[in-house]
Image (cartoon, rainbow, N blue to C red; front, side, top):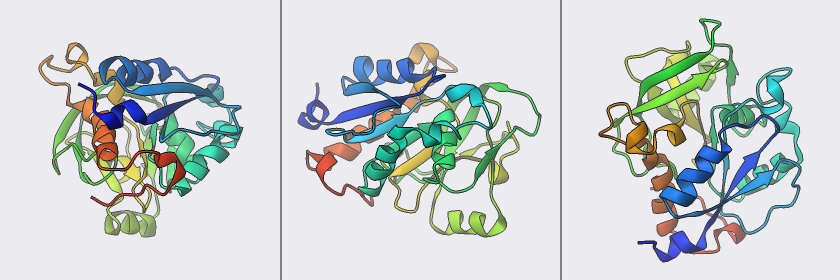
Length: 248
């Protein structure tokens, strides 16, 4: 049964030339979770009425120059930055994470995997911060089996930034007993200091149904999206018109 909040809030899914995971996310949000989610083309320079934004994976602009850099200069990103400043939840998945990094909405950099090869397989990640709009449905240190598919997923940062990320609880997800790409400190996902903007390399939309889960008995990756429902259930409606940062 839908809650009143589920019926009211609306999620945007940014789409760029080369995006290829937007339909997966649209399916999960609309058909599995019964939410309202719409595609938004990257040339859109005015966005109103949306309470959250998800930037999906893929190869925006064919990863020309470097992954995410061209998309980071698309008109829609100015609106994403405004939404982020207003405290609305923003999630970037894989290429979406790269776009958030290149947009300076998240710190650090994402480089070529240390294997110099595209990695496409399952892994296990650990939830280090369960106080964000996208992780509040998890227990701290809970493990998630989840797919990865990336060639430039190695998260790098200098020593001071790593210290700051740890101090501010910005390391949200970490690879558990696995090192698929050489990321510093095994980082799989981070958030901004306020906690409303989050980027992650793994693909929760590809493990949000039991049929697609690793052992066909668990689909807990969908809690990335269910956490957003819980977040909004605790908020007042019309979030797109006011600050919405929450500290759980």
